[in-house]
Image 1 (cartoon, rainbow, N blue to C red):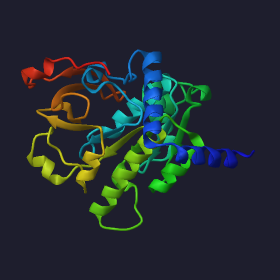
Image 2: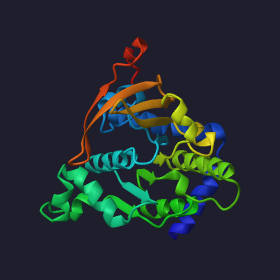
Image 3: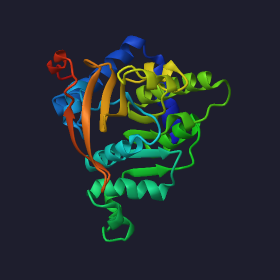
Image 4: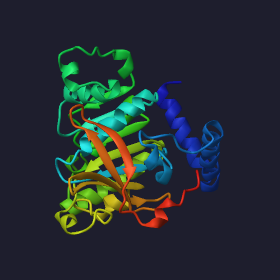
Length: 284
């Protein structure tokens, strides 16, 4: 049988199952993951955040909201390089920079080296280190994202940034609403993790960063399992957990950044926390 016929056969078998059969199958898959790892999630680069978010979970959507030039792309490069070191297949889609830029940004973080050493070829890039990385600069719509997923089957898709992904019709609000739901469906259906960078509405300048609004539609906030906000406060760069489906939100961290090399040096819980954030979450 051809691969297409095998896929059609699987679809027919799936259609014949009741929804409770499918639910049991999905639960058994999660139980298998839990048995293998001792937990449902795997680590992110930041254990201090994992304490509250249960790390990284397949089938979930993570969104980083910030104004322009606030370092959200750099944070995505940090995630990408870390996941590659953990042997994950990573697809990085950029709507702002070319694939060669993406490669040396991610390589800089991967090797923990100065970007000048990469550009001057002092730091050798081993292709085998990036065999599970796929980079794209020309994917402009959700259909293209789905198509490349089917081709490369990544564990993690990173989109920088989500507002630049187009939709076939509608107002900006309708576009982002449909796009947000499609991205969520893709994550759940394929059991993968999706990260994206998002612009925020101007109204967020007038509120605290635990109450940010992502640009164009509330659907992007609702369709995300975790939403981070990045901002400056009194010359200290902050990242907040603005939404958290797995434990308390409204938790703020101070970020120390090495601006010579462009990576996070240290995250620490901000002194502006309420006392209740010291409660440790259950490990899912």
